[in-house]
Image 1 (cartoon, rainbow, N blue to C red):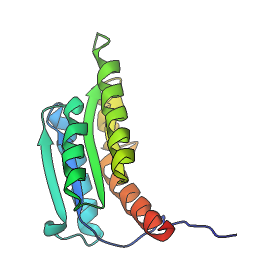
Image 2: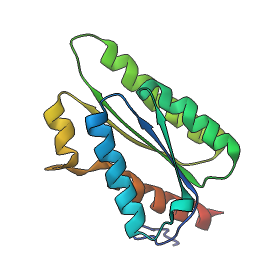
Image 3: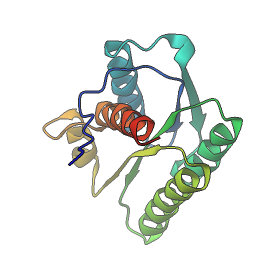
Length: 154
């Protein structure tokens, strides 16, 4: 039996990060954590491209454009959607999630979904370095793992 497990992958590659400006209090923390983790893993500034977009709904189109360049081995999508008083939350979460998945599959390129979808700001805080860890750092770790696995699969 052959098992591919790259949980502790150690490699560098060109990586794109698309980050939503909406709820920037949270998304800036996600980005800071992602960049910190990339630095810890040995990535150079030249390996990292950060693209800011207005909101979570715009994340997939920016991911698509980065994917079309053919220069990135992975893209990390960062955003924060906090539930409000309307159904708008559902539509935004669904559009961002499905859009990123579509970009990933259509371009045979990992697009890691580091978009928080929380009920309130406290939950978002808990996921940007609080009690529930740091989802920006986690998205980077997932990017390293899946890129390594895909390289081994061939």
